[in-house]
Length: 239
Ligand code: SF4
Ligand code: SF4
Ligand code: FES
Image (tube, rainbow, N blue to C red; front, side):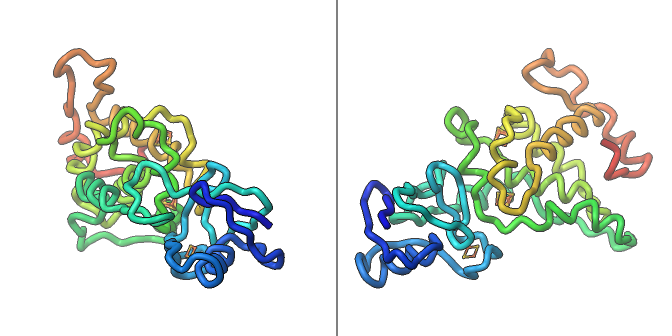
């Protein structure tokens, strides 16, 4: 069986059916300097994501066929062969406060509350959604699908008190820059509907006085009503 990896043809043992096993075979038998990332070999750690025939896929859960073309993820600097540097993504998580900022000590989390953020909490940090996103071709500062779906997750977390800082952080190079094309949702191995989360974040922003800068005139209404909203109690499901 032949695989094309980074425009180089490799002949793989016919008995190998899994892409990660093919990478390991190449390293052990053909090219000792061939470099790729993996950890769990079971679809849980997210470190083996690559493009297979131009679609982001986890190597460890992908079956191969002859003449498949393998490339590293897009939109990230390549360290070597199939290894990419995801520091940019980590920076965007910090920039958008996509984490628990201020713990509400008094919150009581029910199973219903957990269920509301369960799917977003299952992200395995594979970077596939970033690679699939066409916005990076025109705006490298875009906060991007992974960070935005994490912001959605924490805005819906009853333990989070700092909702305003998160909404503020995703107004520029954030929710309004997404074209809602859905490419990120299609490639997510955890079936997180990232596009839908971003759409809800847009609606949530409007409900709280923010507006799409493409349609707003100067400073009109930006952020009005948020304080009123908070004083009435944060309803994480008020989309
Ligand atoms: S839906 Fe938005 S975030 Fe997702 S790939 Fe398309 S433009 Fe990027
Ligand atoms: S949201 Fe999905 S595609 Fe994006 S990093 Fe997480 S698991 Fe990967
Ligand atoms: S090696 Fe962990 S997801 Fe593939």
